[in-house]
Image 1 (tube, rainbow, N blue to C red):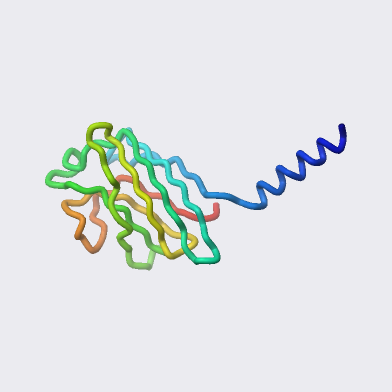
Image 2: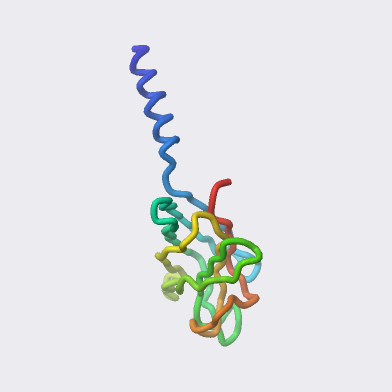
Length: 138
């Protein structure tokens, strides 16, 4: 009986030591009250990149958040002095007020924002931030 407890304890310690994906449950900013984002970030040290999966729920259409806007754009940057990089768009479904994004960012730790934009060709994020989260170790 004692050995089974030791085995369980060692197994649990190994699972914690192996890490696993970083998971975040993020509430929206005041721009999109009531919306939520589930972010899963899988750090790939050997490739020096992070795979990012985002699922948003209860998100109002872009035009209701900011007039003439049509896109939710995902951005990343290494630190506060770095330039933002556009990662892509949220694939938004107005019918269920949700959307998804899958992509990668070439850093192991970074800041992530989702903004509402008039189109998807913008070079930098606008002021209409819907979600913001630091990705990396706590």
